[in-house]
Image: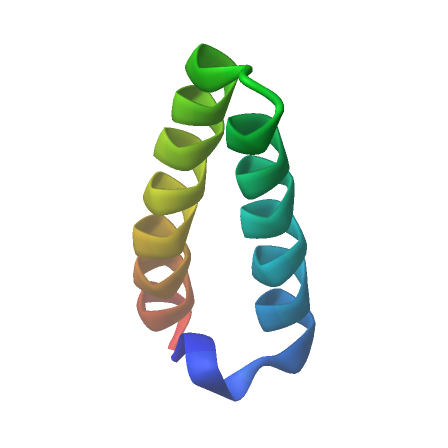
Length: 53
């Protein structure tokens, strides 16, 4: 499902770029929180979309 929505894909690319920036600047704990949120949203979003159909 994630590959079908370009807006969501762009938002995730931005999110992961911010996470990479956080790692590169040494803000590792904040990067880990961002990574956890990103992975959770990536898994919950398809569940919500499928449950609406």
